[in-house]
Each structure stands twice: as structure tokens, then as C-alpha cells.
Length: 456
Image (cartoon, rainbow, N blue to C red; front, side, top):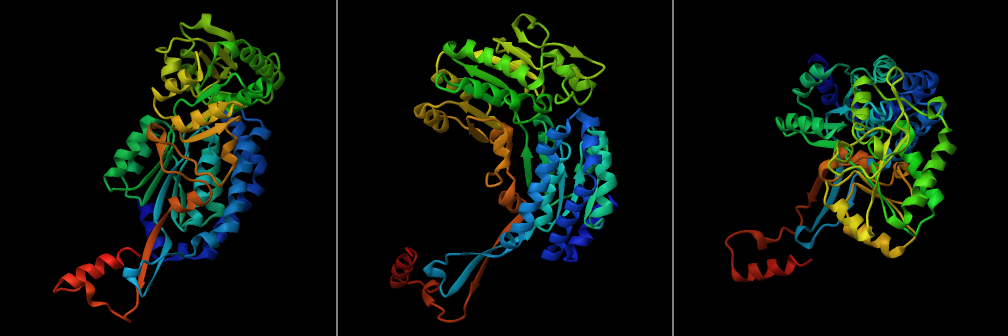
């Protein structure tokens, strides 16, 4: 692909290593967003039915916040980082120098089609890379908009938007990159990793999975319900870190279900279909996939279940006690269905989670310090969030990433800068005082001296 050769040529010129170029590209991206705010909101609405508030909080404003952070911190993060030099290497100096990787591929997901492309790009730009952006073809309006805007504002010799379907993406993955970042499903993540292995290309994979939500007996049930409903049903449940199912004890089951029902009414009204704040499913295929989870479990529905294929609408739906072997409990839902599973105790809840693949996010609602300590110490997840859902993403001091099947690598803030950099160790030795202890011929005193010096 000729454009990749052009990107490699640009990188080889050293142009992107300049801090002035990096800052200039970040400012240009900020300008692109600010001058096209309304157009961006419209594209997100066309793709997913997102209201303006939700689009701002979870996409547009999120990226602007990232840009502001990197404009402030890139100069500092790009500086060599001095580290200790052991006595054996004296006289000398040791440092770690961040350097850009080269040409990187960023493959975004359709559920947050602006944020999941541009947020990684901010980090990759700040680190001094050339970039191929591959928006999801499913979020067509946003993909087309990025393909139109990016070359108008950013350096076209260093940043390219590549659109296309599965076949086009397959061809793209045959090319050699210096890093690939992919956000999406586990199945496609495996394809990306196999393609990357051809050139031993490092990857960052953000894959999702079934993120559990534990509700303890000792909790504020109203706030718990409000935060679960908000985190689950924003973007019509199409969020990789949304609570996928709830684990609750018999004592808390009925109070929780009642509180969830009240919260749904409070946030979306008696008919969420009429709510301007409730989104739609991305396309017909995903609509059919999600509604298929309802087959055979109609008697388990507490509230919701209404669908409209023409509008790609699925009501916020609460499900109690589905069979653990049913598809809704075996696959990542990625839609507005929320199963509730009764467990006898917090011990059982922890065992339930540990018997399954490690999730991208784990949520616990509890005021009990022993329970919090237990879940923290005895479970593994990409992120543990206590007494809230989803909002941990706002903290740029956190690395965001999965563990096990939910992904590998991380980004956000400095973690993103480092992910798109090679942290090159540099040792600078002096010619002064060259100790003969390491040179042959070896003797007993040299061995003793070496052992002694190696302690420091």
C-alpha cells in the first residue's frame, strides 16, 4: 500500500520527532473538533442515536480532555528519564529515552466511534509516530466524517484515515507496522494478533468480555441502582465496560430490583422509546444478535423486552435468574439487557467471578471494608471500581486495559504515551578509571572484587 510507504518516508525524515510538530498536530486536532462540534454530534446520532449530552461526555469532551492533558505534559514525558547507575558501571550515567515507534495502526470500534479512534491517536501523535487510523465501517457516518476532516486539519504525510470493510481490513493487516492497537471483540483480537505475529509487531488489545457487578447487603441501594442503570444503559448498553450482569444475595435481591425499576423510570421515563436520551442499536445484525438472547427466557423478564426492528430499538431490560448455560450468560451482551443472578454470599460471588474469564471491569457496591478487601485481593480484572460504574475512565492517571481474555497492554495519559513509545535505555560510560577487574585473565582476587562490587 503506497500510503504506508509515504508514512514510513515521513517518519524516516525525523519530522515527527520534533516536539513542535507534535504540539502542532495536537492543536490542529483540537481545532478540528471545536470547528466541527455540531457535525460530530450529528454523525454520532446518525450512527447510534446518541443524544448530545452523552456524545459530549463520552466522546467529544473526552477527547478534548485528552488533548489538553497531552498539550500540557508531552514535553515532560518526552524528556530522558534519569535512573540509578550501579557501582559496577561507574563512572557512568544511565537514562531512559522515549522514542517514537514509527508507523502505528489504530483500529477503532463502532460503539464509541470518535473516542476509540481519536483518544489513542492523541497518545500516538504525542509520542511522535506516523499513524494509520481505521475507523469501524459499522459506524459509517463517523467514519466518513473522520475521513473527510482529518486530512484537512492534520499532516496528510503523517496521518492517514483508511476506510473499508472486512476485506479491506484484512489487506491492511498484511502490512508491516511498528505497533497495532485494536479495540473490539475477542474473536477479531485473535485475528489481529495472528497478523501482527507475522512481523513480531507489538499489540495493544482492548477486548471487553462480561464485566460483573456485585451488590453487597451493606450498600446504599438507591445510589447503587442509579449508578448501575446509568453505566449499563448509556449508549443502549453498547459499552465494553458496562456491567454485563449483577450478582446479588437473597436479602438484597428484591430491594435492588425495585430500586433498579424506579431508577429506569427516573432516567428514561415510563416509555424509554420516547426518551431523547436513550440510544439505538448500531445495525440490524447486532439488533438480531441481542434480541436473540431473549429467546426462551421470556418468563425471566422483570421489565423491558420491547423491541422495534425498524428503529433498532431495544428497551432497557432486566432479567432475573437466566440459566447460566443460556447465551445471555455465556456471551458478552453488548446491549441493553441486564441479567441478575442470585448468589448465597460474597464468597459465592467471588467464586462465580473466578470461575470465568478475567473481565475488563469489575464493579462492587459495598460499604463493608472486609468485603471490599476480599474482592480486591481475591479477584482479577482490568479495573476494579468500587461504588460506581464506568466513570473510572475519566481518571487519566489510571492505565486502561484488560487482563487475560479481556485484553493486553494499556493506554490513557502517560500510559498511552509510553505504549506508543520505545523506552530506550541509554548507558553512557566514561573512559576514566577503567577497572581491570572484568578483564581476563581471571583470578581469585578479581572474583572476590566483582562479587563485592555487584552488591552496590
